[in-house]
Length: 254
Image (cartoon, rainbow, N blue to C red; front, side):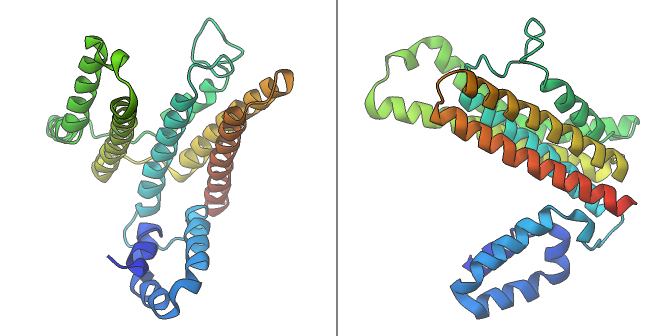
């Protein structure tokens, strides 16, 4: 796969289907000097789904739904990397530091595609879930067995690095396959309306803004830590992505 093809694949699916060959040809002809503009164009289009063409009805909503869950998965991985944390929690006994979770869960609920309530559809959904999640489930089981055996506690050097790498690769693999499952469900499910998707994105953006704000507030009160600053910055970028996309969808609906 050459660079032009790879860069073209970064564009939203509808854009690739309509203009992908033209983009690939232009990038290939222009060479490396066109790469920054190509990347910027792909990022800009992902933030403006209202500008996407549709090759079939509901394509934009389907892609945005999957992208929303991908953003949520990225948030989960980011927060997992920062644990343990007293600033951001998910505990009913600590409502102040868990406040960010409420709009996040509400946004996920609003964006969830609803499968048809028929026996055949549910059987198909179950089969798709088994096929999609079998490998990540096996990976998680292997990870848990390793942790419970106590072997990981005695690893040092390269073995310890390999174990940590395996742990994060497993989490990333699980997140990826969950997004694949959402994409497969979205093919036959009742997709959320544009209004619901917009509201869901704004709720998730609000949640991430709260999370970033809580982190920054904690940094002001205590000694700043580079890890906390990086986490707050990443949360802020994810929040801006969700809010920008949500506003664009709302304008499209209007």
